[in-house]
Length: 187
Image (cartoon, rainbow, N blue to C red; front, side, top):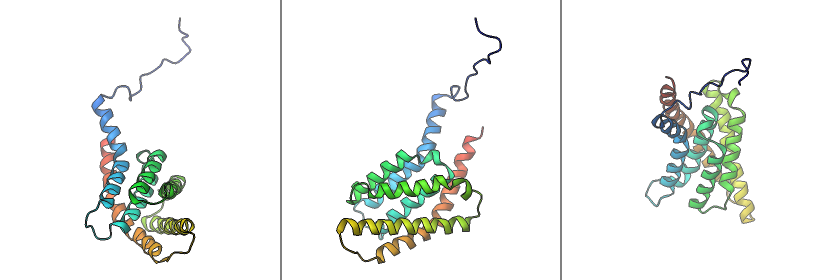
């Protein structure tokens, strides 16, 4: 016999969702990770896209940072790690370098998300500029370490500037997608 003082178990709204609604919710949560994987495939493919090698890290770092701040459920740590390994495999870089850098970017975005969400765009952009520059500098330092001699820092500087410069366009695009996804979440 059940105790009348114990609260009754209520069905979750999650169990009342149809399979189509669950599939839709899952697809919306996977969208940032799938987008990033498609960007890696597109910019790593042997196409004649000018500046593809320079744009790839900038777009991936921007994507990881934005979704880590604004919707961390769309960019979980495991997905970031797997995307970094995938980026290393298709880019013929030492295995784990991109995964390490992307996990650091993800960690910074996730850790600072509540503070960043309250700031205006220019402040967030400036703070991201520091993160993007640090990611490019770390990538350059690790490349120097693996080759055991100093490399020219100009490509790392250019990558940092490209990463910072692409952020407003990608942020506006992702904000638009986030708005659409949030509209679908509300009943």
